[in-house]
Image (cartoon, rainbow, N blue to C red; front, side, top):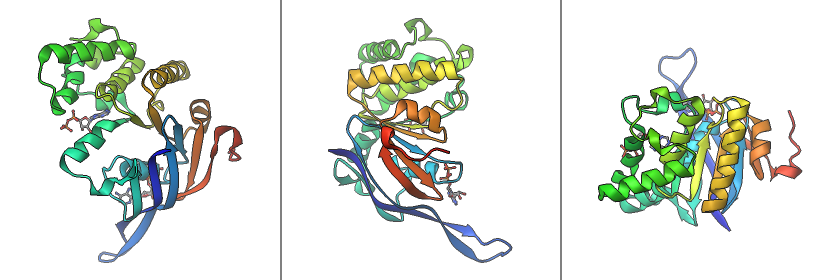
Length: 245
Ligand code: ADP
Ligand code: ADP
């Protein structure tokens, strides 16, 4: 059964009319998107730049609410979540963003960076926090000896592992990966895909990959939604996908 469902989801932005000082017009970045993501899926949303992927990412993570339709998590409309429920949803669905060079605070040690989300979510015992962070570092293939290091000296692949660890430390059920592998070379991409595979088996995770890279997505995902100009133009199991640019 579905862990995430989109029902006729649209997102409209007001934009300034070209060549006009006063007028605005409506831009429909996402149009009537409907799909189900099943627990344990590696689900991909793929398409060219401008097709609405980032907008969909913001809708899935409730950074924005849709102007039409609904996004459901285990049957609940996430637009209505607040307070503790929203914190619960943010723990359940974790974002892993693209660029590890920009998204890691440069002056925070790696261990401290991974401790922060635990504190936000109410962990208090310093010994338990350290223990959890070490376990997660080990899980994602980061040497625990890097605990007190700054991200400065890390390779791109290691930085992306820190990003993944920051998401994993809260024991999420869903990882929403927005161009997570796009900044990495092929060898690192393969290594991380192998890691994601391992983590998925160990923790029963559901993955949502947002990507422009169809070749990568076809290696990683069992189900693929192809977007074009805001619409899902194809939705199929990987081995049945017709779309081929
Ligand atoms: P992608 O991530 O696939 O490149 P986006 O979701 O960023 O696509 O953009 C889809 C369309 O919506 C584009 O035409 C973009 O200019 C527009 N858009 C995205 N976000 C906004 C916004 N906050 N305000 C106005 N227009 C936006
Ligand atoms: P806060 O409680 O202030 O949101 P967080 O530690 O949750 O503090 O987040 C700090 C910053 O890091 C925010 O800008 C957030 O968007 C970003 N962030 C949080 N978790 C992740 C993650 N798993 N992957 C990438 N960025 C994240």
